[in-house]
Image (cartoon, rainbow, N blue to C red; front, side, top):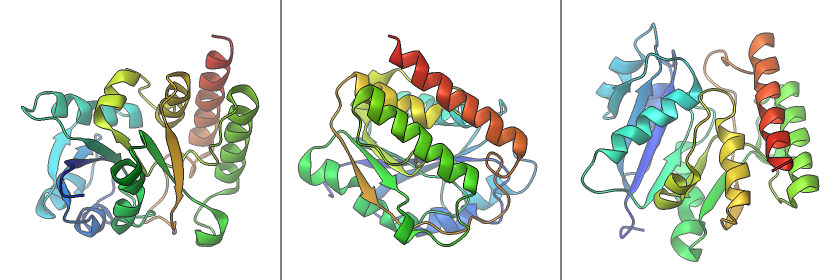
Amino acid sequence: MSTKTIKVIIPAYNEADSIAKVVSALPKTVSEIIVVNNNSTDATAENARKAGATVLKETRKGYGYACLCGMQYLSEQSKAPDILVFIDGDYSDYPEELTKVVAPIVDRDIDFVIGARVKHLREDGSMTPQQIFGNWLATFLMKILFRATFTDLGPFRAIKYDKLLGLEMGDKTYGWTIEMQLKALKQNLTYTEVPVRYKRRIGISKVSGTVKGSIFAGIKILGWIFKYSIK
């Protein structure tokens, strides 16, 4: 694994209580941890910087905006990473499992890996009913429409950097994860899932923790699926 350059992007909005835990728990094999401070009003940026992360600022609120900001930063570096990992800043994932998530890329030359939040590895209450139903519906539709084998839209994911650039990602908000999976299917990328543990997040979710966030996320996800089903 030491022959592969791995970098991590963490979108973060008001994650002051958790961000340092995420940064500190990531394996030392990661060459750079990039926290994109997405217009936080708390000490997210300061705590991330103290934990050793590179901190970027993206004032346009949206998960996709934050991810795109991190990718723009990487595009300006002299040497591109081999693998890019995305993980949330709320400490619901186990960052130390990054090694497991990137293993199919390193060992089997797979293009794209999802850290799947399987039921037997999830802490009770770590996913809301709307998250569980939304994941089931989205992956069911992808199976029917695209013969996909995804079971989750999990945010903990790894992808070859050059393959990610080829996807030409564009979603600015809630549709980022589903856009990546649909475009990976359309471009015939090799992909797999790795079961990962999942626990209750620190703080309140900005998406599934609110009615508005859940509705808009659902609309975005279904919109992307049906957009690609008629192409």
